[in-house]
Image 1 (cartoon, one colour):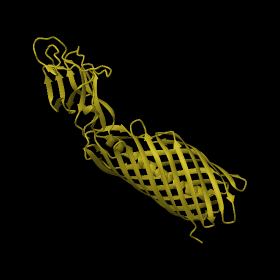
Image 2 (spheres, helix red, strand yellow):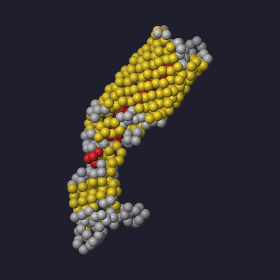
Image 3 (tube, rainbow, N blue to C red):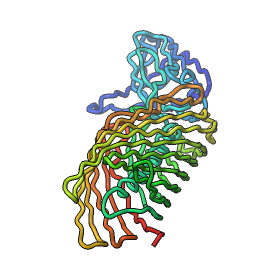
Image 4 (cartoon, rainbow, N blue to C red):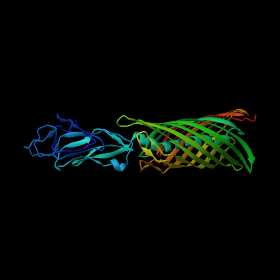
Length: 434
């Protein structure tokens, strides 16, 4: 092994071995050139005959300066440094255009926000930029993962308002709902898997006025998320406060609206290419809104088909932070919008004056618009997640009495940069004015 560490080493001798890159040959093998990313090896040679040793400085031959097969290993790792500090940086130069030595990567090294490996280009070896490091990938994925949590909460409030319009008469009251889901995000730069579990509690009341039946209320959501990819891990906590309302007019047109404030806390950890543990944390605040309008087509006394359109948005503002390996992440204003066109359909089976079952189905087109990028170590990196998707959902609501009901539903959403493999709501509502 030839270890030059961080030095600028000049070899005024031939670099020689009798190994080949061809695995089918009996002399397959390689020598190791080990170095840090700030090291450099210049091979000048001296025109000597290959005598089979790694370095030949005799004075009786006339051959190329380097021959044989070598693996280049990058030993250091750091979170500091820009792309310009590493990308295409020269590691080795053989001052002989006729060299027949082959150099390939022995490993990938975490340098700044990206991983790099050695790549031969003619008679030089340079650092080739690869994918994001595990820690940078997690840091850049956090705003998208926060948005996923908020979208689940938004769906939970939406389910409460939709159910208030169907089944037996709903006069408002207290409600509680579990929500959860699994997400896979991949925009070509960031990549993550996320599991979310949370609970929402709310209280609302029904008001008649202005030719409409109104539901007005407030809710609070609490969620935990677990995001990971390779060695990267993020533990998420979020708290959200909602106010919401729904107006159902006599002509069966309805309008739902909500406003929210959220706080997200994220603790990040990962392992670097050299085995070093990395951690850091970040907090962000966000404001959100939702607006939905549709029309309830009645199918007899029990069925309904409801075409609707909705728009929602979350606007995050995060803090500047630095990981333990010196990678710096600038605070990001991360904006995400969701547009949805769909249809709900259901049918209420009435068993008595107090009991009814309403199964329902949902199909929708969803477009997520989240064109964002973030500065890491001074470089702008794309971390927006967007695209078109299809939502399919099934659910049921059961009224046990006039004053108590329960519901459950499940959804799949796929096609954009973030696939929602599954999500679920399980909740109940009770009229407190008995």
